[in-house]
Amino acid sequence: MYFEYGEKEIEYLKSKDRRLGEVIDKVGKIDRAVSDDLFSSVVNNIVGQQISTKAHVTIWNRMKADLGEINAETLLGAGAEKLQSYGISFRKADYITDFAKKVHSREFDIESLYHKTDEEVIRRLSALKGVGVWTAEMLLLFCMQRPNVLSYGDLAIQRGMRMVYHHRKIDKKLFEKYRRRLSPYCSVASLYFWAVAGGAIPEMKDYAPKNTKKKASKK
Image (cartoon, rainbow, N blue to C red; front, top):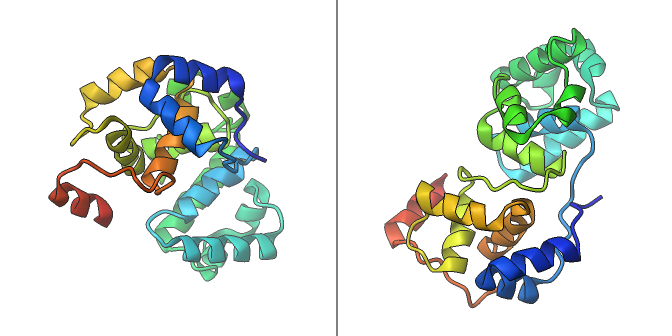
């Protein structure tokens, strides 16, 4: 299952932004995997925080193999100690069980998020333990498939934007200028900024000062 977009979004972005249009033509269609299970996606994002991709995949596969379905009931049945046995830290196990309790008791109505605005979804998700604004934005895009997500807090997005637009730095004011230009299809633009940042077009370079690149690489 991939993020859904097509000619309508592509043609709109190309009509609004020549440089991004050139990137779209060179990179082509991007198939970016998404999930339709918001609960397990929240848990998955908490598990993956501040660990390597390899460790994240190993722990997640271990959890799924043992618990089967990742939902409030299976997590609460397992308990925090069992979660830690999969390789999850004490703090993350606390975040996950707290989230499961809130969903199970209906203190947190996860299904209602699908009827909320992007801003309200971010506000509600980021109020949970272990879920920040960036995580909420990623859930909006890669789980809820909202069309207009562009994360200022994502270092790869900023890198991609520097490379596409030849800027040394993307400050908030400049970022908002591009967000307005690319709206209402910022999510598709994000896919291409990530692709560029990841080296999809080898001849494109990052214009950030060298010391800024080093700082970014450490985060």
